[in-house]
Image (cartoon, rainbow, N blue to C red; front, side):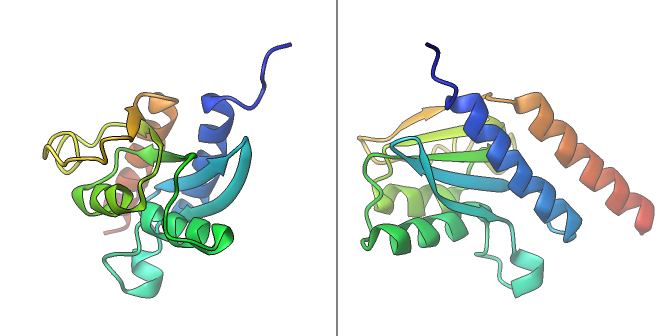
Amino acid sequence: MENLLDDTYFMKKALQEAEEAFRKGEIPVGAVIVIDNRIIARAHNLTELLNDVTAHAEMQAITAAANFLGGKYLQNCTLYVTLEPCQMCAGALYWSQISKIVYGARDEKRGCLTLNTQLHPKTTMLGGVLAEEATELMKRFFIEKRNLN
């Protein structure tokens, strides 16, 4: 029987978080962290609400997952995030020693790949999972934002 809890399933959960960010007027990035096919953290951008430039979805998810696990390392965990992590988030993910990062859309200007940010040697990364959906949500957000200004 096919495993229904695959990368697409968990990225859909991250997209739900991104939609929540969108509803709150935040840049629509969502994240979930998974261990053993179980979501242990859900988060979305909160930079506007918290007036904190570090309150990215990934940072919020890292903190929630570490609290859940009772330790700072996220070994054997996978982060699903709708947008390629920025340099700051990639740095935090490095220190968390997360095992895998799965992202949706590329961030050609500020993403960790463009900026050649080093990940932990044991971290693997996979991109493009539900990239079209993540990109469309981001485009819709900025179109609406421009139309309001």
